[in-house]
Length: 108
Picture (cartoon, rainbow, N blue to C red):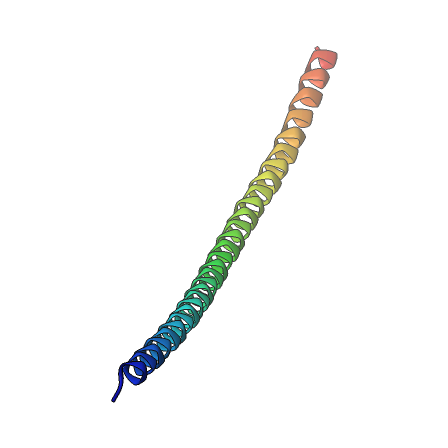
């Protein structure tokens, strides 16, 4: 084999190595891009899951608060009704007392 053939073979080998390096670099870039896409998809799914859980907890908390408000409001309405009934009863007694005092003074 002559010098020229050896140089041609070396150049072919160098070209082959260069092509393999470019292919390897392209493959690395593709894998890296795919890894980033997968990581973003995982992060998006996790964020969506967290958001859904957060919304569910917030909704439950609001429902609990509304139920507590209704309980307190109902209790307040019952107390107000009882106080109003008691006041009406006392008002009758007060009217009777005032009337009896008026009649006592009038009879005297």
